[in-house]
Image (tube, rainbow, N blue to C red):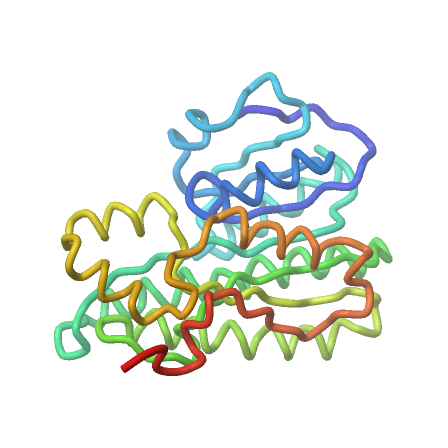
Length: 257
């Protein structure tokens, strides 16, 4: 895989790195001069979007739902790349299915990817940070769906509500080791998947969605990645257990009558 040149600098791990917000996070971190370990289950996509000659990116094909897969990959990183100083949990799936039509298989896939996966990766990385006495930072990407209901995403909302609580629990327990844990809760963000879904469902539905957002627009990926980079930085050194909302006012209430 691309970019496995070892060096002694601090690295940030990003899951779900090959697309969406995860890909944006990697780009923002690289622009800020960080080195990044990009984790994703899509090996082909990783090779497509990342430059194999860039020594600041180390790509690993990892399924975050698989504890053994994660443990093997994470355990090797300190010797392969260097010190792991940060983690961003972006890996997630977002199927839209009415509650009465959700299968047990689909429910398990969403919860296993969005919540169990974040737990597995965070625990593996947290153990490395504690063992190495690294005062690191972990950022989870949750969602307004954790508290704000919308049709068709009962499983997704439940997974993100769990991730929000996991963020707080991790922050409480890891504070003694100097590890900060925070979250960003995006609203409607213009990722490739969201824009494709908007096009598929038509202009009328998209206009209705915009009408529910006081800001009158969907958010940009960069507006989320900038918050994540901030939470990883020393500028946020007194922030832990926080959930930063970035939704253009979506969850404030009804914007107009």
